[in-house]
Length: 98
Image 1 (spheres, one colour):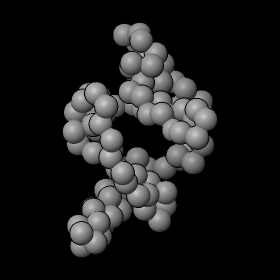
Image 2 (cartoon, one colour; image 1 turned 45 degrees about the vertical axis):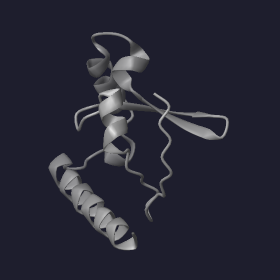
Image 3 (cartoon, one colour; image 1 turned 180 degrees about the vertical axis):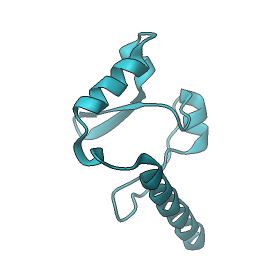
Image 4 (cartoon, one colour; image 1 turned 90 degrees about the vertical axis):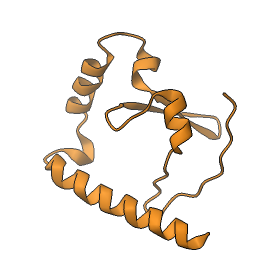
């Protein structure tokens, strides 16, 4: 599973995980991800794999509720719609660059 892809973040610092990598790791739109900084790298792991429990999704949701951060008070459907528009615009911009 040694797949190397070079990518570039958008203006907001967001990156897209390529489809073949998402497929390899079983990441879909409902997956919760654990991000860890190690040395000079960021490791992204599906939360179910990093916690290793069948109840990992419920545990992660409880953690997110307690650490709401920037999402606190957001209407998730509105945030999701805005995020989707940004992702589509970034994708279109990347395609034009090639």
